[in-house]
Picture 1: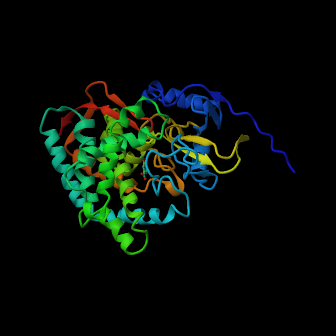
Picture 2: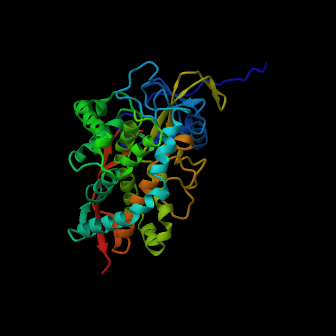
Picture 3: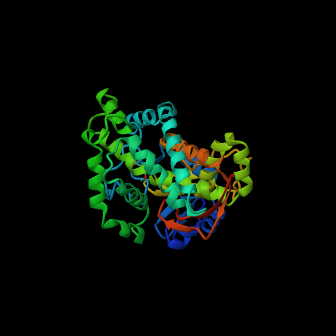
Length: 402
Ligand code: OVM
């Protein structure tokens, strides 16, 4: 028998879910990466990884880093989840696979083709409306906060009433992955009401005869999933499909407003749109973290993590790891951002990413010919969330094409 030497993991005391780190996570991320490939976080008694190589490896190793015990701090094997677990996010193969295949089909680039023209027209209308007013406006409120709510609920097939519940519900779901801090407490008062509303919208009768919701129910009719699974898969759309795209749109608008040379470049060559979107997701990482749980003793770079432990994977840190990226803090359309883990990696990689890309493309294609220059017009304000990197306010000034 060979005895593999194990090293004790460095211990960090700082709370990554504290307001200071959430407001500006970069100094913490650097300390985390520099401390070592695996560290122990005293605050929550969990392990953590912040370097690209180890985060990528853990994300693609679902056998040893499972999701079914929850991808937040709470361990579902010992604690009751705040809602029935997601059939996608909080499941492992084989149970994960049928729901995943169904949703991947429903949200495939092919399936989204029929939405492209309508979303482009919606974006034209929104952008024309916003640009016809004051050249200084809040892009978080008027553009990124508005556009997904114009197109996504209709695409799902949700009725008009109650759509204002979507963002608060998503915001709480993403807070709930963290420790029970003030951000979770703030959402607690409305959990029953919001969960009740979301749950009621997942029924077949509540959904329009055409749309992502109906498509999921059609898969149940074909026997690809059970009728019991369908409403929970619709719930995944309503949980993960709104806040994420709102904050991804803010990320790309912020990146472009603070890098005028890259805005010019994108105007000259709109075929860089996909790069721009992925580069913004890399740089801002709208979803900053997810946990996994070890299914067995795991040795990572010489450090032993026992079975049944929570491991916090810092996607945002991996996406700025200088071991992986040149000038990681720069938004640069010359780079190839593929390989970023902003959408995760492996079997759970964001199933809705084509929806997010289509939204960003529609919005930016409407803006590019009309806006010669976009810049910050004031100090942007963060919206704090235990998982999301978000803007509460993004004041911009635009100079229009004459
Ligand atoms: C879900 C889900 C998937 C991804 C993220 C997420 C709240 C939820 O399946 O409900 O965040």
